[in-house]
Length: 258
Image (cartoon, rainbow, N blue to C red; front, side, top):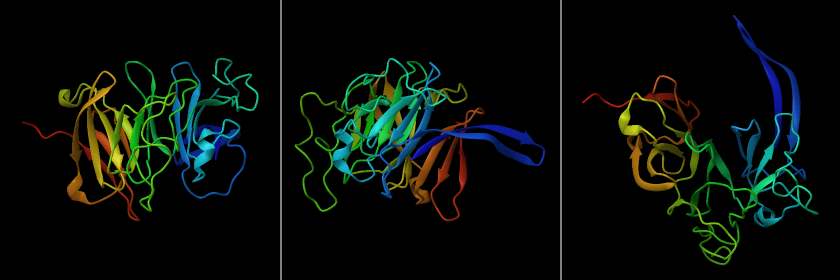
């Protein structure tokens, strides 16, 4: 997994990328074909958060010498911010912001607080919403609300001292992918809501927030029967979703007039 920076040059006949530079590479290199994470979020301080899955190597999520199963924080040029929590700690990768993650395939900044929120896949159950804080351990694979696909227990249970709890979790799993906060004034009913795509659940989830608590959930688009890969809030106040299908579609959603 790598992050590249480039300049987008727009022309009447399309666009091209110029001055493409790789600014970050996940270390150590691996050929694993699962659990990439790979979401980028620009923070308000100008730095970049990158979510990284554990590449189906569970225990590495607890290993600070590896980037697997982590959220990392880098500068726009790929450098290490001086206030990262593991800067100067022997045996730890200085890019690491938080650890103990399984496969965070969704990430966004909260529109009011500016905090990073992530949504990550559990195993069989145990998908999580987290607000990753500097230096904190989010538990995988030591604690989880899910079980192995074989039905076997994973780790030591659902809680352990020194490990963070999710602010919300799903069991059974919905396989979350993509997330967006709704901030537009067009539909007051959606104000401050969080939308999350569901792959296994084949629907769009609307979550109602009270501060940093989830107080309600509504399933949308379930009748489509299509996996939702990504979701975005558009500048026109509509919600746009990308379906995960060989002939995938981009759908535009609005509320019906009363």
